[in-house]
Amino acid sequence: MASTSADIECRIAPYLDSSADYLTQDLSRLPKSLPFSCASPGASQEKLTAVAFLKTHKTASSTVQNIFFRFAERHNLTVALPHNTCEHQFCYPQNFSIRFVHPYTIHPSIVASHMRLNTSELKRLMPNDTAYVTILREPAAMFESLFSYYNQYCLSFKTVPNASMDAFLSNPLKYYQPQEKYSMYAHNTLIYDLGGDIDHATEDEGYILDFIKKMESLFSLVMIAEYFDESLVLMRRLFSWDLEDIVYVKLNMRSLESKVNVTSVLSDKIRAWNALDAQLYDHFNATFWEKIRQLGIGCVQKEVDQLRQAREQLARQCFGGSPQPRLAAQIRNKDLRPWQPSNKVSIVGYDLPAVAGSELCLKLVMPEKQYTKYLLKKQGIKVRQKMGHRTLLPAKSLTRGQSQHHKGVQSPYPARGSTINQWVSIMN
Image (tube, rainbow, N blue to C red; front, side, top):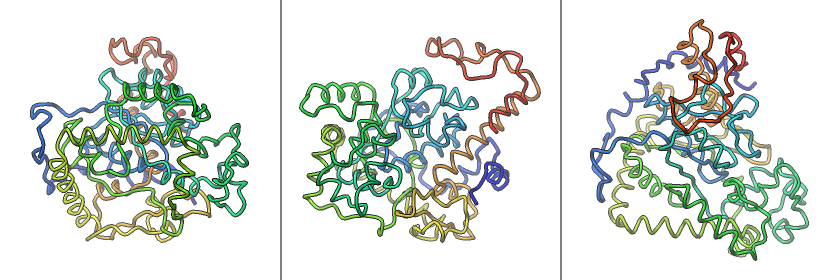
């Protein structure tokens, strides 16, 4: 039986202290702020705490999301979370709207859940000084993962004989159904997640060039999944974060049995079919390495080594060694069992040793859906504690200060005169 919000709240109630001490005590043995090996971004610069992470599909983005969720808790920041009707995503695949944000989380510092990018709406939600970040993955590897993960949801995949990716790629137009709800998983998924037209003619070179320019103007950093640790080093420097802020455990991985070997022939077919994704990835992979070279490859490698040493140290604290992925059925704690998209693919997770009672260790390996429920419950408790039994303020008074940023936003909060019981009912 799936865990309810009440079940999760019961098990984690002792850890709902807003001081977040439980997330810092376990990090005390890690080097808090090792000096940057390359030129420092500025020793006196404060940590950047307003971040919008555009979570793309099958790009290691769940691991990045977990980093942002833990950072937000550790620094007592509000995370924008989807309304209950959207589950754990912002009503994807619809274009993002502020209407999809749960009212408990409407004035966030961090957003990191799946959405289809709608830049104007996202900027209305976030503070003016927000840094925008996303992550891309090499299209051939990403498509293999998409085909496996969504083969029972995307009709373009589901109708392929024997669920054969080779068969699909031999004649993609035979199986591709552009009008069906989840067609974006079958064609140029990166372009779709970032708000573009997945079926735009590849012959129109101006379209992808213009799209890339728009992405360059929005994102301060485009991470590359194949160089995950290097990406985190760049992110840490951009945000002036500490080393402890970027430690991680890999999440939402498939079992080895669920993966298909991608030959060079298949890779070429995938990149040809997803030509817009391929051009997007190739461009930002090149600019990524320009950033690395500007800092110095040797310097970046030293910081990568520091990160990996910190991860090993934390793994010893939490697992007694390297974390061992397990099938969901083998994980004793059901709150740590990752969601399984179908019986055709196995998503692995982690079990914690009985001696590992650390809440940090739990959060390191908590799957996306459970962590989202937990954060929503925790932030809801904080809101209710602040409001007490008072009548809510008018929606107009609940905007972020006098910022021009939120003018004209239709507030999803209950109207003047609503009671706290009406407010709480939003959660149910």
